Image: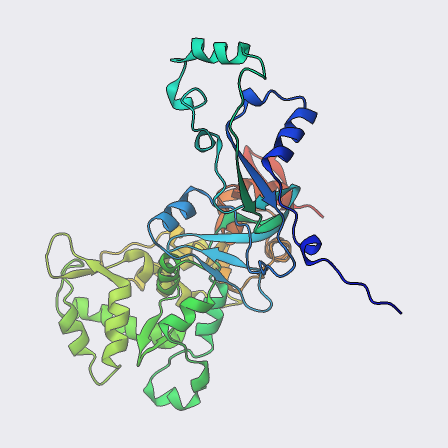
Length: 425
């Protein structure tokens, strides 16, 4: 069989010429005098151009500002997790979205103002040369030959989809689950802890789907402290025992609530609990005193919650008056209990013959909104929005409110002028 030789020049990419451009303009019935002098010819990428590592990402004002300020954006997500994008302050859910048209990525492409060398065609000249431009338009084609420059612009990639970002609340559940694996209950019990399950601050930050600022909030929410370079949470009974001894020093030393001394508190518990544990819990539960510089005061809300958690053991029910009395008696003198401190910790159930208060921890509920709603309505048939809010606000976004979630997953009714939400099914 006779072999065929291929002309190398024919196999090369065809390059347009200024004559081609003029012919196209003429076929399109355009007046070349109304066009700028620069033509940019686009060439689609050849097969040897590797652009698979490029993705189109939609940015909001916050993300764009972070990039312009030299900050870094982070993608986070495990093998079985949905992808999120984090700045130092916010977290975004990332989803792929199709584009109805094709978008071309063309480096160094010039826009209209940059394609004209004539002051007549530049938008910066305004109408200053309007009379001269009309004179140009009135000229015949033979009277004026428009100079034309042709530049080649390679298309780097053609996009048919992009990443759409939607701001969401931080996903703290994984942080809590990882920290709960190695709860600290004293140095004498450390032999029971699986060392490979201990995580540093950086390891948790890289794993948990939230921004750095939100991550710090999460550590505070779970009351985590750093021990020997690893982040730990306390076993509840152990934490309550240490806090109770710290609070006992208030009356023992005749301190006012806003005159608590940090060093004396740490020294008083030496030999009872590790210094890092006492110092860490002290820093979480107290704030600097406004009246007495250099001294501290315990946060009433945090003290009230851990005391209430000690009383509200799972499965137990308390009559309202009985619970409030027991709760108040367990608090240091000068602190007051309030039902608002039970937010996400316990509920007031008024459906029975005798109203009662019982435990319902938000962190133990399902992470799926539908499953969580079923669990909540199984616990109690009717909820007000205020009662439901602490248990579903983790599913809200800047564009999705609690009321919107309830409208979708529950139905409402009014009884005695009060609006309640009940199960849809």
